[in-house]
Length: 612
Image 1 (cartoon, rainbow, N blue to C red):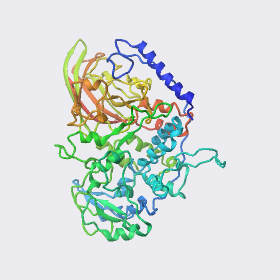
Image 2: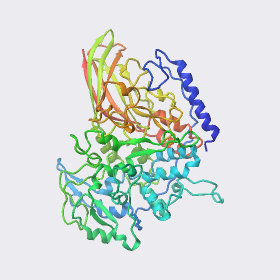
Image 3: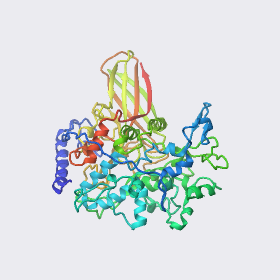
Image 4: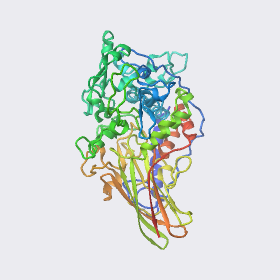
């Protein structure tokens, strides 16, 4: 547990670090690492050393997925009819379609979903570590944290308890001494004999999403897990709705076998349904866990709001819903089930749930036993799908200007092709530019933004000390400057914080905006913050950075290659989290898995140019 003295000590340490940094600035009139300050060459004092890793792993149990209670059915119940039998030849599988390459593609719903991060949301070890860290920091808010964090990561369990008991009265993590009167078992220590455990571990599952009602969607009340699931009496169990994209669904068979009544629901294909969990608003608290009277609302995630401000919103030039990109539609008809499907349907939305966190999927693939994941699941095809998906998210243009006295002047323009900020979501994420210049013989004569094997980026301030951060740059003229696109949160004391509940506003938000997003005409929830706010070359989905690269020698012509890369969990953020790994088991569990992961980021796009 983090004590009051630890909390105030942490605050004091942060204050002292900033003071030290101010004294160490070189060629800069502002503060250390602050994005609201002047740019310049900085020297950063290293942060505190991390405790030695414990090397421990979790031991989660597997769960039953074939439950079917009055509120929800497990994913296996749905997959029984919506998955092809994998033992029969693919040419004989009902839910398989011909591709343009002339081969069959299996589009089984459960098969596509089960290796997504949605399906494994409650087994996500990073989520466990962050929730445990928040509870340790704010123990008096444990009930609130359990509720707000499970409403979207373990939504069936959260909804089940509210419907049965009128509120959340469970714990994610056990407390007290086992066998003693003070022992309270947490969900993560339960097994498949527990109804609550089975509901939680099925993640964001079929009967959760397909029961979301068209009630208040798109309003503030529906955000942060404010979705509505109907309450059905046991006697009317087979009237539970299963909303889908098709009119005139085949109802009798599903009603008889799975006890759901399929209904057309246009809302299931809209961004407003996704927004219920992908817009996250919090009520910030100070270091003592006290809510602020001045700052009562912080939109830590606002993907839906960002989309509304883009050219991808309904009625805009590039109109596309969340599902359009993350659940792409087939361009040929397909049967929706393996039996009793009367006819093939057009425009079927594949349940691949394409996403960006391949690092987490690799961690899950490599730690199935520890995380209680079916050992037969193969995450690698999903990782490859997502890797290919990521390559559609951005464009990079490199424009050489001049080469004088060994200094190469060139511009790099990055364009966001997604319908929200890039990167989006939780504030641990960042994208960055990695620049490599090679001479005519292939010898590297300049490099900026190189990632080390531990996930740190050479020259990035927060990877030296997690109390500071890399400013937004208009011009990069030194190896200590790297263009990093990210959201950095601050607390009531105007200090950087890595805690979710302690976050009150953005100190820096230079994540690439989507096309059509005018930074000068958006709400405060999605505003550009820090130096990018006044950068004339940062707006409407693009950013242009000038590089003045001093080459180490070599022979012309020189080839400039710029990689635009994405890292789902930044090294600075992890250093702050891992500082608690000797005190919080879930943090050490995640540290063990992360440090063994073979890769820490992905290439989104790249551009090249040559100068004589």
